[in-house]
Length: 461
Image 1 (tube, rainbow, N blue to C red):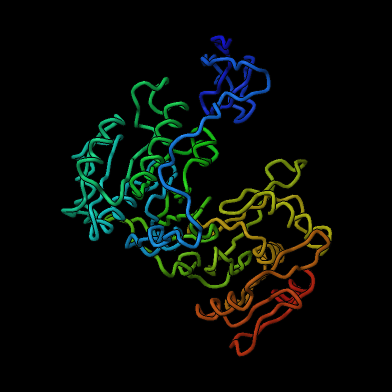
Image 2 (image 1 turned 45 degrees about the vertical axis):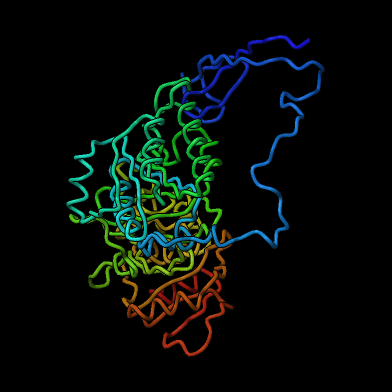
């Protein structure tokens, strides 16, 4: 006969990781002091090896159909009216789809969704539920950015049951919840924003979206390392995970797709944050270039963000080490520090560039973060330029991945990159040997098989 049992487990309050014994440090997110006892009740099964889910047939909500008879029109994306956001989403919001938008506090998540909600309200009612601000505060922001619409409904709620009542009353085509960490459900253990509450509320909102074919956007917080806060299952519950980031000291903001069941994950949307809200940047390349005479230590490259080429400038500076016996250190902004260290090692070992024991500073322009390997050659050329105190020609770009043997590896979409560089006024380019550049490009292309020859072309070293 089945008997009632009570299992004692320990769960992390930060990420939801569970274990059968108490530990001081979470085995998933490595947080200290976050593991506490969590009791779960259950019923033991009659026979060992059998699952707890009963093998009893139920009544299906919809009958199974041949796949050719399934109507796919209901899953067609609806544009939000913001071209840059639609680009990342893969065309727009899908009815019944759940989108999680994560970003640091103050980056502009609420502003972005308020503008998108006002635009989407032109074709149907939109419900904006805020749990972090009062309705009057959101109204003030809407007045400032011009996001006023008679079909945009606003509710300040933190209770899940009240949220459901608003959905029933408004019957929106788009639901925006800002943020999911502030919504709590009665009967669910834990405090608002806790692992259990966030997981259960998100699961309930996802079920609501599927049941009503309601496009839903949830705002989420991020942790110190930039990842989505809450249990890891949160990202599995939703259909799309977007990251909204940017330098808080600058105006550039970028939307990236970390997960997308309905479209690509290699696209970015660019915005400029101003006094009157967010402005879409369909051509953001000019933001990442400085307007000055040639200076030693700088080089321009072309990186690919999804299918969009971006022309960006890499700047480097060498300085005397504070303590002479200390080895070289590098300080970066907008670049991967480990990749900078690798390029420095290749320069020292394969090209004979005498950097010496100097501090290396490497940065980008406009707050853009360059992570693609194709920027390696521009970084190497910039460092060699700073060491020799010779400027790279103003109309030259460098594109290529640098290998540990000092070779330059080919990259994708070389012709597209060169076309974008020429559009912005560049007339010469250094590319890896054997690159497919196409014909008819009005730009002088010089191929280089290794870093040493590329440096010789750029600065005559």
